[in-house]
Each structure stands twice: as structure tokens, then as C-alpha cells.
Image (cartoon, rainbow, N blue to C red; front, side):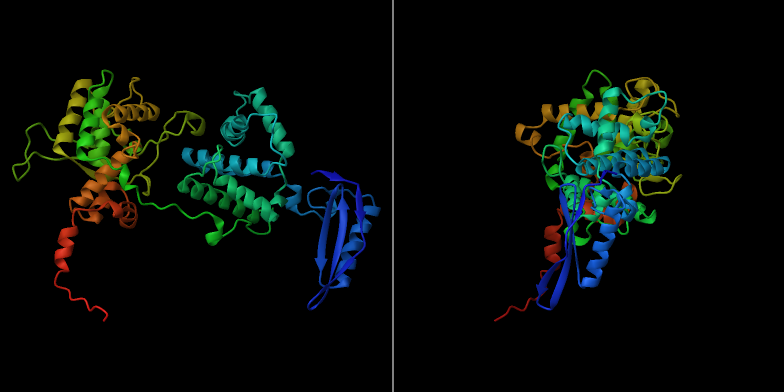
Length: 469
């Protein structure tokens, strides 16, 4: 903690108020003045005497709080950066790869906001990278076989020396600065509402941890509407939905790619027509798909449908965030217990497409249904996202390409689920196939359900409305 012996205690200032007097104790530590107002002269005298006693006995005063070191709280004695590292190390073993990455992002933005001064001698991006990728990555920071690069260590040492103590959380202006930092990107643009909500939720857990361990007396983060932590609207943007013709054209373009085109077409078709999440689709094995033989018919004489049994997800988070060092992390299904499964119908046309992939690549039951270009590997997210972007640019009209239509790979799932809902499939059934709860499903897709307006209007045509005279 930074401290000084340069202390001067002034006399008590009496100030008249409508209901009497108040008494203000003023003192100076270094070049900064501090003050505290009391309702009675006795209390003011007691504070002034304590300050004088500490100064005369040669006790150092904190430059941050202005109080004698012996009066300092645990918050004043604890450096935020050191505390943040302690918290990250505490939660790391039990956190998923995505959670680890998100915690690091929140801690990075918070730490930059709690610096005494901005590190003008370092590039701002390099500072954030050093914090996010090394300081708040327990695996890399503590790995004796991968020492922190010298340039990164210089930045982290500077940050450690120039970070404010935890007592900064007791000052409203510092809390406001952190909240603003979580809401703003490095280039000054506003962060997405979902990102702000996620980071605020993480930081709230950090504050609860600080209170539980006696570092802070209470959670300093604002609550309610003033917090700026309102959760972004879950409902999707209707403009992000692709129409049937656009989906067909995109899949056709992808299927004609000379390298792995058939696999990528089948992968994207599974998202568009079976509604799987990308991390679920990449984890599918051949044995997870029941695919009727070619020409097989159902009891109505129609082509038979197939079925996926989805039981795991493999989100791609980066090898530096996983325990295995692999870019994908094996997880159970979102919102479900470990070992739980769900079944999803496979349209007959998709059945034929998947059978074509299996036959072309001679895949066995234990093989990945959508193998990556490297033998035995999974589809790389960076590759299929880049391919999807190229397909949009090649297929869509310029104004469509510049619009939100299908901009994210995840929008393929949105196309499928809205199609099911608009075809009149009950939300409970769609939710079961999609792996959502009904309330979440309706919150996301309610604005995109259409095609039933005329039927609804017919139902109320006989209702008589009493108009005011």
C-alpha cells in the first residue's frame, strides 16, 4: 500500500445548518486533502485527536484513504489485482472453458478501469491481451513449462504496482467507472447487451466472494434500473432469418466446394432443418443418427423420417482454456443434467444427405458424422464460420449480405425453430426438440411467429365491441 509521513491536521470547521451545527475535520496527506463531517463537536474532536496521535507517533498514512495504516480496513490493505488473481485461481478448477474465458474478459475490463493511471508506455491492446490471456488464465500463468514471455511479464508487473486497492470499491466514482468499462468496447462503441449482462453477473459473483471473505463490507455494485445491467432482450431480430430460397442457395453453393463440400453442406443442413446448436452438431457420431434405408416408407406410405439422439456438446473455446489442451471441450447438453439426452426428427431429404456423407467417407458407427478436414478431428469453428461468410457473400444480393440475414452460423438454428413454430407445431414439442424450455422458446421466437393472423381474426369476428359515445 502507498503511504507517506507527510501529514497535516487542521482545526475543526463549524458549519451552521438549518437544524443546528455540523463539525468538519480536515487533514492533508501528501498533496491531497481529506475531510469528515460529524453531527457533534465531541465526535469531531475524537477523530482529530486520533489523527494527531497517529501523526505524532510517526505512523504512516495511506495515500488512498488518508487514514493511518493502523486504521486501514482489509480492503485498503488488499490490492485489486492480487485479489482478482486469487478469485480466478479459486474458481478455475470447477469452471467450464467458456466460463473461464468470460471471467477473464470481465476481470480484464475491471482491472483496466481500476488502474491509478493508464499505461501510456504500453499498447492498450497488448495490456488487455496480457491480462486476459496470461494473468487471468490460471493454467498458463502457473505452467512451469510455458513461462510468461518477458514482454508480457513487464506489463503485468506494472499493472500489479499501479492497481488500486479494494477500498476503491467504496468510492462511487470508481464503481461507476467499472460499470462503464464493462459496457464499452475498446474502440468506444457500446458493448452488446448480452455481453454487458454476462460480465456484470460475473463481477457480482466476485463482489459476493469479497464480502464473504471479509475484504468488503457490502456488495458495492448498483442494483435495479440504475445498475446498467439490464438483460438484453432475448428475442431474435426477425431480419436475421433467411427464407427457404436463400437457405437452399447457400447449401447448394457450400456443397459444390471442392474440399469437404459435402460434409459442410450436411453440417449446415443439420442446423437449418434439425435445429441443432453448432456445438451439438460437431459432436454427433454416426451411431447417434437413426437413418432409414433409401426407399423405406412410413405407415402412411411417405418417405420415413430419421432421428438424432443428442447427448453431448463440444463447444470450441480454445486449447488455453481447457484442461485437455484441445480446442473443444466435452460438455453435457445445455440446461440438462450430465447423461441426459434428447431426440430430434430428421427430415427424409436430410436423411439422404447424411447417408451420402457416410457412404462417401466410409464412416463407421463410432466416427464423427461431420469429421473435420484433419483426420479424426472435429470441424473447426473458425473454418465453418469463414465458409458460411463466403457463402453469404457469393449467394446473397449486396443489400442482403449487408443485412443481419443469416449473419451468424447460429442463425441457421433460428431458421429451423421459427419454421417449426410457423407450421403450427405446438411450442411444447418444438421446445423438446430444440432443448429449450417453453418460456425461453417463446421469449426468443414470439416476434417471428406469423402466418396465422387471418385465422385469429376470423375467430374474433363475432365479438361485439362497445364503443364509447
